[in-house]
Length: 180
Image (cartoon, rainbow, N blue to C red; front, side, top):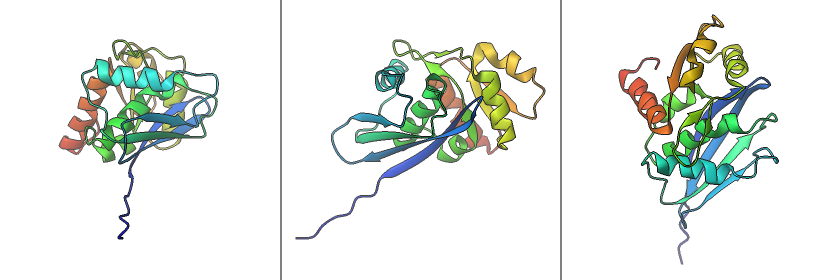
C-alpha cells in the first residue's frame, strides 16, 4: 500500500505591540474543517471564536481544511494579533497575497459579530516596533491612522475598518507591486 505524504500550506503574517513584532503562522492540512490556535496569550480565551466570527461576518470563506494558527512568542499581547491571524488564515485559502502579507504588519482586534477592526491601545507602540524591525507598511484600525502617522516614522500607515478591507488592500498592493 502506497503512503501519500501531504504537505501543509503554511503562511506567515506579522503583528506588533510595544514589546516587538510577533510572527503568526497559519497552516492547513487536509481534514475536517476546524480552527485551532496555539501560543496565544493564556488570558484570552476566545480568539478562535472572535477570529472565525469576524471572517464569516465579512462574507469571507474559511479554508475547507483543518487550520492551525501558531503564535511565535506572543509577547504578552493578544487582541492586537487578531487581524494578522485572520489574514494569515485567509491566505492559506488563497484569499490574500502571501508576499504582501509577509511584508506588512497588521495591528487590530476584531469584533466577531460584525468583523470590524477595533481600536487597540497597542497601535502606536506596534508601529514603533514595526519601524524598528524594518517594516515599511502597517495596517491599523482606521480611527488610529492619524495618531500613528503623527509619530513621523518612515512608514506607510493604512487604516482599515474590517477584515474584508484589509484583504482588499493587501491584494491591491500586491497587484500594483508597490506598498499599500
